[in-house]
Length: 329
Ligand SMILES: NC(=O)c1ccc[n+]([C@@H]2O[C@H](COP(=O)([O-])OP(=O)(O)OC[C@H]3O[C@@H](n4cnc5c(N)ncnc54)[C@H](O)[C@@H]3O)[C@@H](O)[C@H]2O)c1
Image (tube, protein in one colour):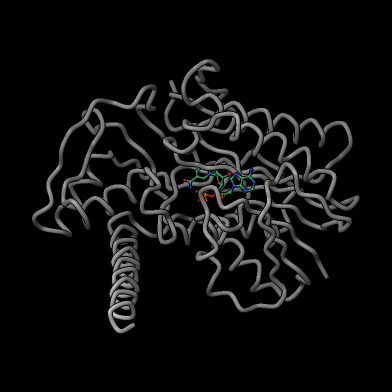
């Protein structure tokens, strides 16, 4: 039976991965380490499985006498506005977090890490294969995130080379879906929450910058297969994402069609916002045969919108209930 530690398990992707881990019969315990910086306990409130333990703690400080068979290190904000605000904290979460968690892995255990397509920077080749070394500015405003992911990759690949550490490293491209924060700041959730509140979507620059939008269910399926389900020799880095390239403006326009009456406002570009992002999935096809990002953005955006609507309705009814209760006292 396996003991699994997930750092960042109260976040958007982490909480979905925890759901998937708890479907495993060979898991004895799942320990989530999260400081609730960008995550929320609400993301795991639906879980009643007694194998789940949540520790509210910085990953770089977490200490225990327990040792784990699998460590999945996801603690780090992924949203640019959040990571740009507190760069030192981002570097600590990724690099110091990984160094700390390595001590908690039992000998022979597996260390999995969610790196990012941001290691490719503003890429000069498209699509980006894992062999592309990137066009990154180590003094730029995104560097705390890009470089701490690169440094953690170096730490893990070097540990594998020198001491045979069993690792799995993915480079995630843009993911979206239910359980993203309303104030997350990334395009899809931003547009949806703006559409539902102010009815005005803000697009930075001309909106022609492209991304590959991966719906959460597809992304989690790839992580589950690569991290524990499939027996594969390849250790990474593995690009994970949808290789259908769609512009930010197309996504915004799609949302205005789903919510008539909403409009788009153009704002100045975000500094060093990459012009394009699209994964080369050649290695993915070999390592996880049959995996595809099945959910098209049109469908994924609709599902995410439904989820945001439900969340808003639940919040409003909680507020109404609280007001009625106060009036009755
Ligand atoms: N979502 C994406 O599109 C995407 C793309 C590329 C890479 N990734 C990577 O995937 C992982 C998860 O991303 P996400 O979208 O779920 O982000 P998220 O912000 O929703 O989740 C991150 C979680 O980590 C926690 N956390 C942050 N710093 C911590 C620390 N020092 N100690 C303990 N907990 C800490 C947060 O509270 C949060 O629960 C991250 O490593 C991110 O870099 C995500």
